[in-house]
Length: 124
Ligand code: FES
Image (cartoon, rainbow, N blue to C red; front, side, top):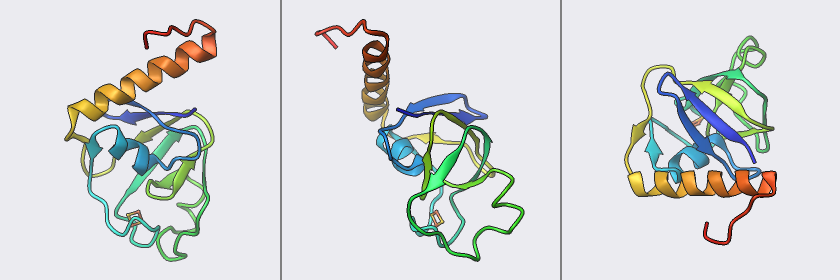
């Protein structure tokens, strides 16, 4: 159950397994500039500072240079984290547009953590 940490704001977002970074951030109440949502425009490009991700669906050959394909450049609309990752926004910060969704995401993260540690509570 991957966790995405976002620089420079320091937000920590919990993702469902096999969820894209973009989907997880939007489900957690955040927004930022995006375009096609299909790996074709590069508007959602961020830098992956740590951790690994994969693309379960194709991305256009023209959106990432050969160098970007190996330097951690990440298309958030298609990138699925393989574990916890840290990303850095490029030209803007995340905007919290729905604090309620953020609260739900935090509860999900706490619940997942308690399940993993064996301290699950029926109240959560
Ligand atoms: S939104 Fe177009 S490549 Fe991600």
